Each structure stands twice: as C-alpha cells, then as structure tokens.
Image (cartoon, rainbow, N blue to C red):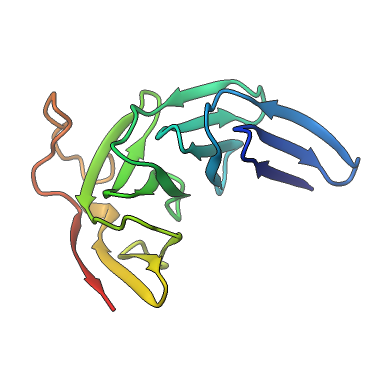
Length: 173
C-alpha cells in the first residue's frame, strides 16, 4: 500500500497508493537521496543521501530516530539484515553495520568500492555482494552471528573500533 521515494532535491516522500496521496515528506537530508530501505518487521525507514549520512525514521510517528555521523564518502546503498537487527550501508570506501537507539557502528570493512551501484545480502547473512562497475561484482564474507549485538561481544572502543570483526576480505570478479 505504501511506497517510499527519494529525489534529487533531498526529499524523501511516503505515498499511500490506495488513497492516491502523499502521506508525509522527510526533508532533513541536504543532498540527493541515494538509498532507501524499509525494515522487514517494524515501521522503520532508513534513508541515505549524498550528504554522507544515514537517517532512520519511525513510520508511525514520522519522527527522526537517529542520524549516523557523516562518512568519508557518499553512502550509495542501505539495507536491513534479514532479521532486521542491523542496518548495512555501502559507501565509496566501506561497508558498515549499524545499530540504532543509540546509533552505533558495530563493524566495518574497507572495500574501496568507489562507484557502488547496488548491494545485497545472501539468505542467512553470510555473504554481502556489491555491484561496483560495469561487469564487476564484489563479494564479502559476513557473519552477523559474530557481531554485536548478536554475539555478546564487548562494546567497541571509543574510536568505534572492534576487535575480531564479522566482515572479512572481499573477492571481485
């Protein structure tokens, strides 16, 4: 029934297809929208923009839940894990795994994807794939079960680093 759209003007819009009307606008991004993701079980929306941030929205109240710190480069893809417990972002330099309330980066891997076009997670959450350039696909090994909050691992250090991350090296073909 609902459709979410993001535009070059930085606006994210929530539409009701049944009623044929706009339900709400989310105007807080300051650059073109680059990615949208809807939580698999909750009324939660993730948006990414060329302003280098991810924002999470409560779709019942339309309130902003949190905003990630700006990344070094543009975030080009965002998706929730299969169970909805984490949010993955793919940027020019890295893949990051986020939690919210409060916002925190659980893990990251440097990818140097640069021109990421799309990203997906295989069923079971063991592989992350990214379409990078014409005819190039990168695949990263990931095990969400080895990552906080799923593993019970200690919290990251103040600089955000975490020993023994769940993301491992990549393969490009």
